[in-house]
Image (spheres, each protein chain N blue to C red):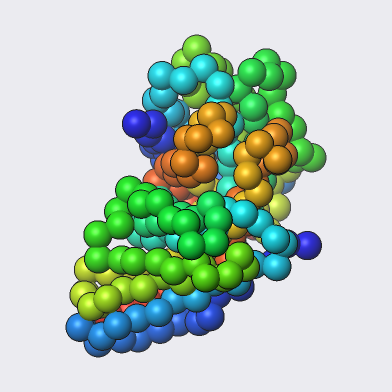
Length: 117
Length: 117
């Protein structure tokens, strides 16, 4: 079974600075998807960024980018120019690329990001 | 926009009561999921459904059951609520991976915070 580990329960960053959230995962599969989800306080969880394992290029979405290290099984999220609205719980998640893999996401324990003005 | 709604944001029930949590999605998604979110544990899958009347157990199905009579609606049932089921419950939906491919994403509802006393 796959596992996802987020080793930083809490992080803080100064507004306008850059912060990196860590995620490692364990799998024996070669093809899979990785995700970062954001859960703002009292609001719905939304997808921030996704990465397909067969793609070597790191995904980017505006101020959000990932550092995907397949051999190291590492998938960190970098937030540039942090804004107050970035304060949230961030979850790393894994999904097998197999169609019959149960359609499930495996989540890490989450990292609470605080942004200081 | 995809919309996933849950019947209640907050719910307080007594030990032994039968509890129904309802989830509705409006995007004609095949897959629907129920997760439980607890601090430090991230999200854990309780059950998922890939079609009407079809269901599969997730990681923590004990004490729960589900019902999917219509494609847009997925219900989570606590047959006899216990205090250790006090938690945040999140519903999600998605297309089949085979249809979504590289754009695979699970869409989440706002969550139901259940307290069992």
